[in-house]
Image 1 (cartoon, one colour):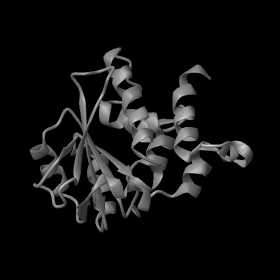
Image 2: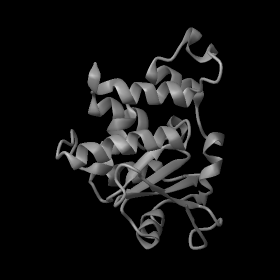
Image 3: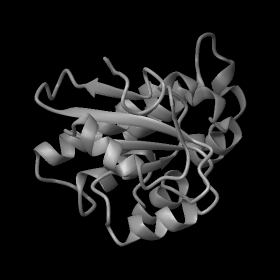
Image 4: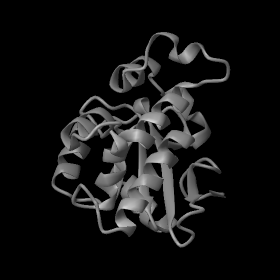
Length: 186
C-alpha cells in the first residue's frame, strides 16, 4: 500500500504490512542524491532517530528488506533482540551472519551513501516527514530501488558466487534471503 502526496512523488513512501504480525507496519522511503550522509551517520550513532538508515545500494529489492523486517519483528515479539532496538535489529537481520558491527558497516548508512532507505516501524507519514527533513536529498518512489542496487557488493557481502545465480529463475534477492533465513540455524 502506498501513501501519497506529502513527500514529493506520489509513491515516495510505502507501508509494508506483515501477515505474521498484522498489528505491525514498516514505513519506507527511498531518498536519492543524499549529500549529508556523513553528518547523518554521526546523528544515527548518537541515536537521534528512531529509524533505520539503510544504504540502498545493499538492498536487492523489497522482498530482501521484508525478509529482514520479518526476522526483526519475530525477535522483538520474543523479547530476543540482539541489538539495542528494533531499527538496529532490522539492519542486523539483513546480514546472513552474527556480527552486529559487520551488519552496520555493510548495510547501514555510510559516509559515502548516496541513496538511503529510511525504515520506521509502526510510524505515521508525519513521523517519516520529520526524519526525512534531516536528509539533504530527494524522496523517490521505492520502485526506483533497483537503480541504486550494487549487485557486486551484495554478492561479496553474502558470498554469492559461481553457479548459484545460474539456476533458472534464481535472483540475487533469493540468494540474500536464503542467507537471512538460515542464519540462526548455522
